Amino acid sequence: MAKTSAIERNLKRIKLVEKFRKKREKLKKIIKNKKLPLDERFNAQLKLSKLPKNSAKIRIRNRCEITGRPHGVYRKLKISRIALRQLASSGKIPGMTKSSW
Image 1 (cartoon, rainbow, N blue to C red):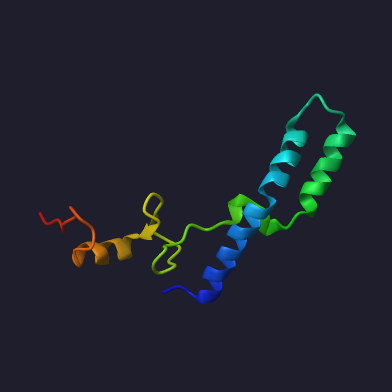
Image 2: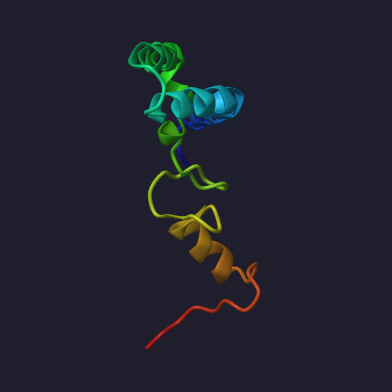
C-alpha cells in the first residue's frame, strides 16, 4: 500500500488540473498564435507561469485505484499488475485465468 500522503497529493493535483483546465487552454492558445503581437503572447506566458505548478496535467501520476502503487499500472484498467494478479487469482475477473507453460 502506498503512503496515504502521496495518494492525497495526487488527488489534490487532479482537482487542481480540472479547476484550471479552461484557463490554461485559453492561455496556451494565445501563446501558440503567431499572428498576435509578441507582447500579448508574452503577457499570456507570464499569466500561465503564475498559475499553480500542480495545475499542469503532466504533474498527475498514474496510480493504482486499489493500492495506490505508482509503478506497473495498466492505463485502461487503472490497476497495478500486482492487484490485477490478485484479483485474477481470486476469480474476481471473469475470463482471466493464471497461465502456465
